[in-house]
Image: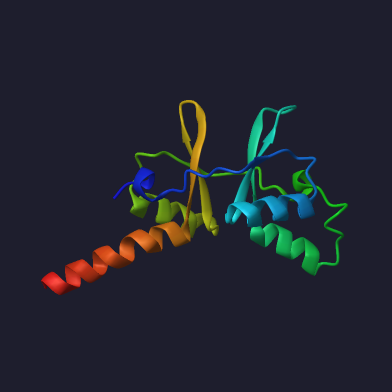
Length: 132
């Protein structure tokens, strides 16, 4: 199975000036665990995850004052829609993260998460076990 088959095509894109509270509200409303942070000044893409927000709040920082840009991971590993789920899982495991932004020639087209991979692998493994 390929990344394109598992990824979420709901890509929440925010700017670096969004507060963490705004980002959290948007992520909750769209039921996603990560947002792509697009910085038009640097033409860079980064990712802000629910864990980034949790770490900030847990450290006592004010989510109304902290910005997405200050908590964005910019050293991002991107996936291609043609990657296998195994390739995506390996990249996540090596990098220690749970989300990959999926890029094609035009920009971000999706996000694949560990949850997406598990959702696809679990039925396939049950089916294989039933055939054995």
